[in-house]
Image 1 (cartoon, rainbow, N blue to C red):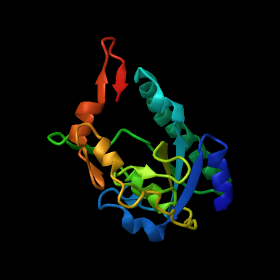
Image 2 (image 1 turned 90 degrees about the vertical axis):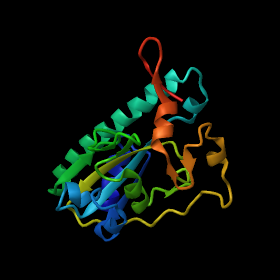
Image 3 (image 1 turned 180 degrees about the vertical axis):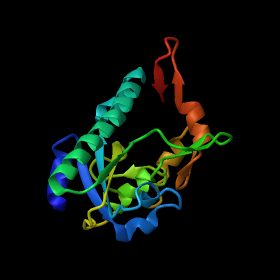
Length: 209
């Protein structure tokens, strides 16, 4: 069953897919667990869609920004379609979760948001990667280029093997490269990051630096 579910995801836009069974739900922060959304949840299906590496090298950044937004939207479409397909094939309930927004938690002073379910914790629990010093998910094949999608499910699925970390011991290149010092080991100061990463050009198109 687990392999069939993964094939559904991989055939419909996902580049990687993993599963976290209910024994791993303890990793989620209080208030941001799958069962806070769906009390009958017994497994989380986590998948990632990679952004083409070439987009990191283009200028103007409008090009990256456009496809970064599109990737999140496409990830949501994959979650929706595959949740319906999983329900159809396995007579279960499946809940697609948004890759980015909307979400409810917002600290206006710190400009800090939190998703309805911790997407990064779900990806780690499902074996898709480990968190780097930047707080970003690092996948052994795709690095930090994955947009992560989730499907909550009431099937008691088996967990995948945790991924090994690809973060190099002693390396602080990501921390030292941030021009505003927003990366503190293990987390990102969202206020600094948002104020310096996101904006609009003269035509009101979104920009991402």
